[in-house]
Length: 214
Image (cartoon, rainbow, N blue to C red; front, side):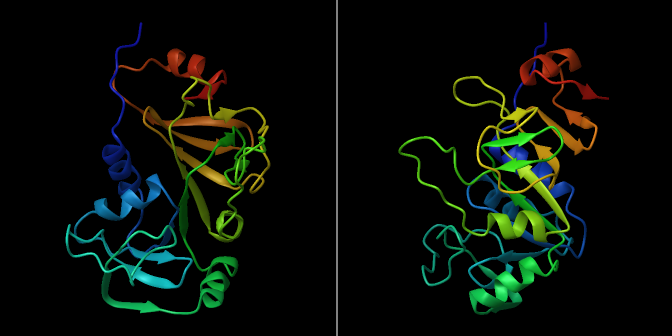
């Protein structure tokens, strides 16, 4: 039986940040992905973009140093690095749609084993759809990564054979970063990149209900 410890949100953010290459232009989605900004390795230049019109964001401001005129797309206060810029959101979306971002990191309700993404609506009565820039990012970025918990609060896998929620993009997700494992989405299904110590491969497959190539 597997005995393992889940990655904390900060550990997960650090894991994602490790894989962002030097010189990358990156958009961090609302929610957990914003934590990645605080874990960019020292000495690595990563240019962070926000769809409301910022390029060159830094880490979150220290407590008491927030400037609420300087916020990201999720309305969180941010900092601006030397050389950073502000611009119209139409120009920001042109960057996204024009393929000028190397990586976007998004949250998700569901991801299929072949990389279909559902992250804007559950389609359930009373749910509030929130497209934002997700569709533009998912298709426009050179690589789309998802950062999320593998399981719902009810213990159901968010990684599925086929999404049951409305799709944001088709076959756009390249990697899934989670509290238990890092997975690659391929046309042939899931491939394991890494997993937490103590978690057996078979146990991970059982949690997801899907085969995972080693």
